[in-house]
Amino acid sequence: MNMHTHRKNKPVSILLVEDDDGDAKAVQRAFSAARINNPMIRLTNGARALEYLRQETEAVPPRRYILLVDVNMPLMDGHELVAKLRETPELKRSIVFMLTTSSDRCDIDTAYDNQVAGYILKQTAGRDFLKLMEMLGGFWRLVEVPEIIAKSGHI
Image (cartoon, rainbow, N blue to C red; front, side, top):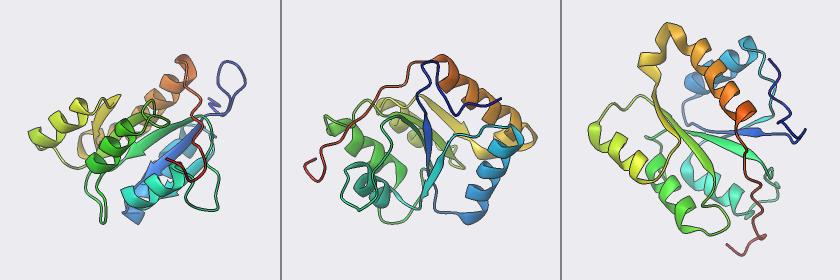
């Protein structure tokens, strides 16, 4: 299943915001096993992700992306990142899935209060992690993903 192109042949990139190398590799392996070939960019914490999306770095973010965000990270956690995205007019339409080990009810409620598309527990995915990644691949194949164009350095 190649999700590299969206229905209108527009690429959808995956922005993985994950500080743990092992978890990041597990996601990459699952995507590979599911034959999901979308471009994947890994950012190691919320602060880096926000700088990248605000175009405060030399790298230019993709116009169409889905964020997979861990909750517990150094510098800026996933909740802070999503709250900042929702406060930023140019980034508020970002599609975000939380992919985390935190089953804390407060974390789940906070995520949905910040309008995430889904809250996925890594440990419940367990053996079904591949199926979970296939489901995510199906999500962006079937839905319209907004183009997000940040004004360089002005957000």
